[in-house]
Image (tube, rainbow over all chains, first blue to last red):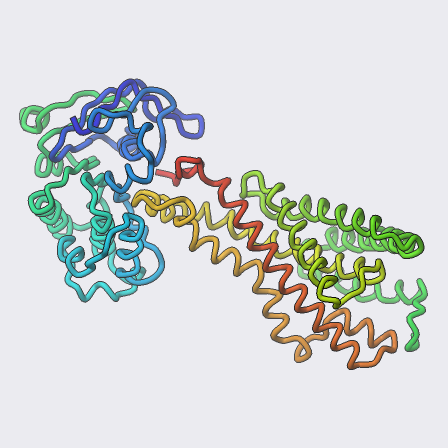
Length: 220
Length: 258
């Protein structure tokens, strides 16, 4: 398993978000699917230690994430948030910042191409891009740290249908070209069906079922 | 009033006419400032009268130890006061205390070491008061901005942490803006000094009949000392306080709303 979550409890501002959650996320492409407020985004944040559970364990490739240096873990398991949140400056500034975090050299043109943008975007002001372009710039920025796993929080929720299809195609292409695993949070079961090999369904802070996509979704 | 510095209580009372005008304007515009103006006037009378006697006693004793005690008390009160402006910053008192103490200590120490002022109460008390007061305002404004930004930009900061950035790297743009907020007012007023306002020390010396050249030189020294002090205070306060927003594992203690 890529990730195992064992009896995970997590509360926020006194409200329980996850309770007794047990789930396994496989290498390849896993979708965490569930309705709004079910704890999907919180689960994703536990995977690269943007937060730690109140109790229970999160294992990454068999080892407790708490035994890992959080910075190294996040460079290996990189999260792209739901809403674009780029730094002030150009797209290139953002990419170079991320590369610097990951102690890597940035080839902005290649990274933008991987994320489905042409090189001319590198010198554009990040704040002046459309939401879809910003989402791709976020993806290019995340790729600059050369992660082994990408955690994607509702990457197409703010996009129209054609932009959504384009991002999905980009992610599928990335998997093939870079051999990285994806964990994709979505409330859209059709998207889970299109993108994932493995599905974990959660509701009310608990995993309700998990399995291969054809078993979990197609049969229902 | 003549060019001497004998000021009667009647003259002070006369200046309250302008305060009354401000109260009338506030009432007319329903700005709801009357109570605050009243409190400000009463507090200024009590506090300045009290400090006048304290300074007189320190001058009479001619004791550097008492100067140190006075400035230490100002630093503590300054930190308490500044904390009110930095409510969104967790545990802001210690960073404020340290920043005011270092800004005050470093600038006063330096002006004495450079021979700009003699190490005597007559110089250290007024300069120390200005340094601590301006440092307090600067640190308070900087931390106020820091608290707002850390909350308003939590998504951006967490997105940066998610790339493997350290908390320092993630907070750096916010720290820069906060530092700028804390120092920009004094920088701007220094730029315009003499053109659209006359600073207090110079005005006071001119009123007291001092030579204008001396008044200007002393004012320049004070402006430069204050610039250094406010920069140190804002820099230290933000540098020490931002850590309180993060856990040792580079996580935001208050993550953005989902």
